[in-house]
Length: 292
Image 1 (cartoon, rainbow, N blue to C red):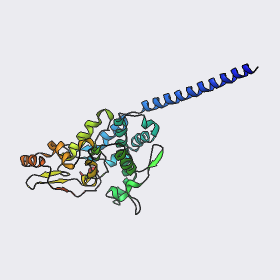
Image 2 (image 1 turned 90 degrees about the horizontal axis):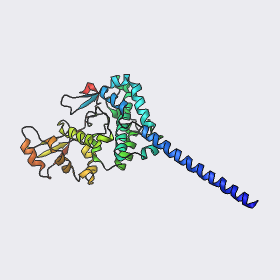
Image 3 (image 1 turned 180 degrees about the vertical axis):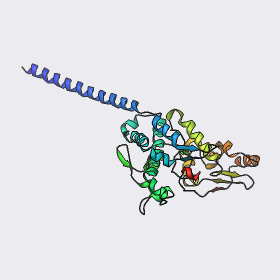
């Protein structure tokens, strides 16, 4: 009788163990399927960007048609909901380029939402800049107005607590766009893991090549750079992505900066990593098509 009872208990324990193991396998398989279901090419978001982002003739600047985007709220919301549906566990299963692409697209996408949500204020003249959307106590980048990883977040969370902490990639400062004229141009396509390194390089090149934002005066022997490089200078001095100084950055992308009558003077200056770097005033006007 005791042997039968022991066999019964052992059988029950075995079955419980098997069921627990099966449940774990099913959950893991389900998570894998869910991760695989995510569109890492961002087809819908990419299509929307192509419709609302206008490029300048030289493709060094871009502006957003916010009126058109306001009329396309549903496609924008669908794209952003896709971002919000991603769980942290799902995100953690992705590779590094997939993770960074996701956060870049989320930051830029939710910035678009912030402007669209307040578009009436811009239309009525009550706001001219994203900075006008803050309050006495809170900047617009500190407003928790969207969900990410199943928690309420703000734009600063994505930039400072995620992207800058989780990745050693200073080139992100040429791709995160804060809806201002002096910001790097918003790309008219989504960032995707398969092309991310190329996109980051191309975006930094375009940003530096736009002499309304960055230029080198060979005659005066000075560089005039965007204030972005003043605010985040430290990110270019850590050795990440091969940059230990802003001089390293300018040297790598020297072809973006060498042009015009001063070509030889600029080339000679860039070879000497010891020249004054000054920072340009920032134009905070909205990056709307009306401000092209």
